[in-house]
Image (cartoon, rainbow, N blue to C red; front, side, top):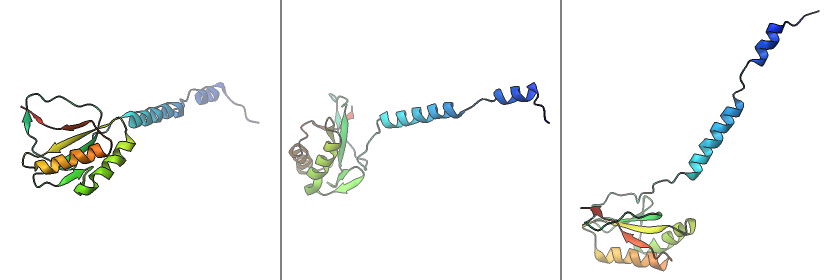
Length: 135
């Protein structure tokens, strides 16, 4: 017959169970990932014109870049001028409160920028802005 000593019983009860702490850490991690706002980029670097009256825009959902060679980039993909409206509609459906910001290069054509603005408004987004550099 085996006798259990008090020292053996105390040793088992003094162990710390880390499972609840790990559960809380994982729940916090999921919470921060879900609530974090990720910075979206158009996909190309452009030389924006300078403006002294520029203001910071909140709730930017759709960034559209127009390069110096009049290429249109949305969400790191080159988009044809005729497809801008459908892409903006899809992205606007994901976040209806979002706005469109056009990052047009200094050397870009006004016709291309105007076509992007018209396509954005035709897609139902009337909050369209042009990105500039602070002077």
